[in-house]
Every structure is written in C-alpha cells, then in structure tokens.
Amino acid sequence: MFNPFRRQPLDPTLQARIPPGQVLTEKWPVLHYGPVPKVDLARWTFRVWGLVEQPLEWTWEQFLSLPSVESVSDIHCVTRWSRLDNRWRGVPVREVLARARPLPQARFVLAHAEYGYTANLPLEALLDDDVLLAYEHDGKPLTPEHGFPLRLVVPKRYFWKSAKWVRGLELLAEDRLGFWEQLGYHNDADPWQEQRYWGD
Image (cartoon, rainbow, N blue to C red; front, side, top):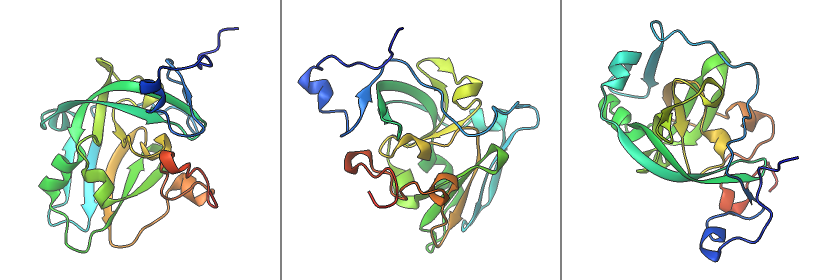
C-alpha cells in the first residue's frame, strides 16, 4: 500500500525545516472533528468583534475585495506530519485587525469557526507576516475538507491552531481556551518545542 509519509533520509536543508518528532509528507491529510459544513456563500459572513474600536462584518464578496497576498509556508500537524512549501492566498490577519483597530487591553484572540469550534492565540502571534485568512492553497480554492471557504493559517504553531471554516475573530483581554486546548492540547502549540499536549 502506498505510504504518503517519507521514510528515506532527507536532504539536510529540508531536514532542518522539520520539527522534532515530525515526518515529511507530500500529501495533505484530512483531519478534523465533526462533519464538513455545507456553506452557502450568499449567507456567509466574517466578523471581528470584542475589544476593538470598530466591530466589522463582511460578506463573501466584500471579504474577497480586501487586499490579498500570496505566502509560502510549512505546516506541521500535531499528529506528526509536516508538509513543506504550501502556497496560500488570502487576506493577512493584520490587515483585518488594522481595520477593526484593537483596543489597548486586547491581548488575545479567539478564532470562531463553524459548529462552535474555537482556537485561541495571543494577538501578537496573529500579526506575523505569514498569518493569513486563506481561501486558496497551491493555486486552487480550498476544498471543503480543508476549510472552504476560509481558514486561518498560523504556520508557526501546530496546525490545529489554523482553524478551518473560520467565521470570525473575537479580541479578548484574557486568554480563553479553544476547543482542543480544553481537551488537553498544549496552549502554546510550538512545534519546535513539541508542545503537543499539556505537560509536554
């Protein structure tokens, strides 16, 4: 049976990009909790609210009119696979946040997705150049299984922080654990520190 995960020795340059405990794959495994949502783009909206000067909401067409960029990054799943050189197109999160204007006391963000799924991150982590609200991957629209129409992409964290089917960002003064963090996943999720679960 075909194994999508590479087991042969890697070029040292590539190996240096793979965090400890990870295996390189050229495939993109599908992993999520619950069913894949059926999205009606005519009714879809994306919101930013909480500790912001200007709460905002966009329709799908309005969101697509925001400035977009292309970014290439590696992704690392807590289930121990890594995929290199993913090419994303989307709206930088910092572009969205700049329009909402976070209040000085805002220090954390809770990403809200379909079915009540959430992922939490420090506000600072979302301001990196490579953090996107992505709608394309490798030159094609996201498939439903990978987050169509929109997913958060935070390459410097394990991939569960890159919430699929994301619908909004809530800015908070205090951290609030997301879905997987409440079930024992590590709050920081740094793949280079192997922060997979609480206690790691």
